[in-house]
Length: 195
View 1 (tube, rainbow, N blue to C red):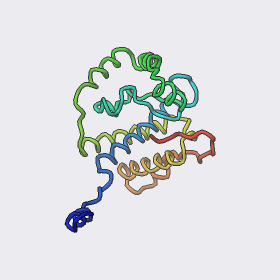
View 2 (spheres, rainbow, N blue to C red):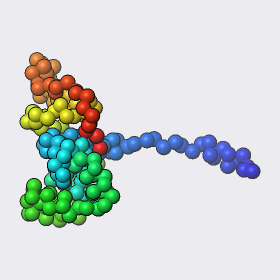
View 3 (cartoon, rainbow, N blue to C red):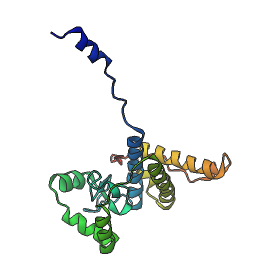
View 4 (spheres, helix red, strand yellow):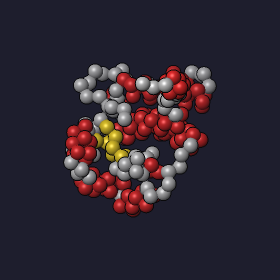
């Protein structure tokens, strides 16, 4: 049996606050990266050529945090290739070769060298990265004809970013209505998962 002092100490412990602002910002940027990568690749799996639905970081996010947001590190994959071929079986040789074909050997070596540096963190840096990714997303949506493949959550995210940019650039003008709208979400059996 515990004495009253220990019981009181247990009650006074603070509950964890939840996710930090930095963690939320990183997750938000990861979602933007996922949408941008899939739109730019036109939802094509880098390994099998099937319908891509997930984003894979060739150099892992945890070990190589410095290049976590680097577009050259992103590989669009289907669920099967991502979970079973890459993560479970560890078959990264084919993916590495395809990534080198896509970005070039020099860019791959430069990214590998850069991955050894310490990661820059902090909210000012993450805000800058988020703003850049949001601008890139608007460009990717305008270029892509595969917008209907996005899940409803991804479409809502795109619309939110587009409205934010139109307000920043033009205020509350008619330009907001002139932005290209994403087609209504079709109930496809296969949706893009925001990672």
